[in-house]
Amino acid sequence: MTSAHHESSTGRATERIPLEEIERAIMQISWLAQRQFMQLLDEDRFRITLPQFYTLIYLQQAGEECKMSDLADATHQSAASLTGVVDRLAEKHLVDRTRHERDRRQVMVVITTRGVELISEIRQARREQMQMALGQLSEQEIDIFLHILDQVLSGMVRVIERGEGRRLA
Amino acid sequence: MTSAHHESSTGRATERIPLEEIERAIMQISWLAQRQFMQLLDEDRFRITLPQFYTLIYLQQAGEECKMSDLADATHQSAASLTGVVDRLAEKHLVDRTRHERDRRQVMVVITTRGVELISEIRQARREQMQMALGQLSEQEIDIFLHILDQVLSGMVRVIERGEGRRLA
DNA sequence: GTGATATACTCAAGGACATTGAATATCAAG
DNA sequence: CTTGATATTCAATGTCCTTGAGTATATCAC
Image (tube, rainbow over the protein chains, first blue to last red):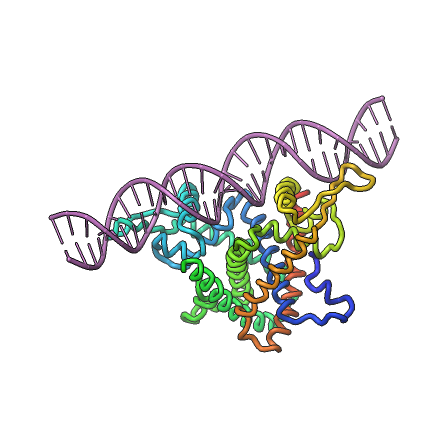
């Protein structure tokens, strides 16, 4: 799995369609990104998990307290699963749980100052890793890549939301 | 988390460097790709997990039996973790474990015919999802994207191998 | 005002997989 | 034969995923 283009460098007898190549590359990047990021997050200075991290990221971007149900939807986690994730984040004082001012069924979650600081440190460490990984790309390539990544991301959001809709049906 | 470019569409007071944007986009794509793929793999017709899938993919690409230690390295899983993953794959008759012909410490793993078939079906289903996600890209964009993805992947492999080397140090 | 229904979140059970450290079996070198 | 190294598995613990159920609360219809 060390080369994304391995099979294509062999004979051209079987022409590869580019979408398959992209599928494979995204698959490998997703897996590698996940394993690499797990290693980084497991360092002594951080000690959080991927689901915890993405939950914090969402809360930070939201800028204000969130409903558990919105947080679950946005991070594509089930409500049951998210309850435990937020439990562990609260134990680490990275989030606080509060009540909705009017609707007592709803639990609100907000990132703490400590949580914001942790996210900031993690992103700095990530930036360093990413710079190592992407250092060979030209500025033009970076701009094009970014533009296409946005479109890919939009497409993926549509697909996953459709999949979740189908599951609720 | 529904727009990869959300913050950039706000005021230009704080200029974003493209590497940060790429970092964020890759982070989001990784997370979404993982959640989306988990849903697909959990369908009744497949019923395997991400670690199981990537382990099978590697075995299929290897084309022959692999040592457990090589398989662990290539898939970035610990040997202890891989033992359980291979246990469960064997229970589902997707892999077989055999002995090394000379070195009895080594356990060899090979994908079965049934495993190859499952991988094939999953990739077909993935292709359909990816086509939905990427359908809006032009052929030129696809070619450029693929080219850059390969470079990104190579860079990430270097980073993760460096990280694992540091851990062994 | 009451009962029915829906919503929001949590709990419980079970399974998968991640970690660390130890155990066991085997191989190679001297 | 001994010693050190290697390969894999085991055990304990923690995290997170699922499904289904439980509890509290809000809304709706009459």
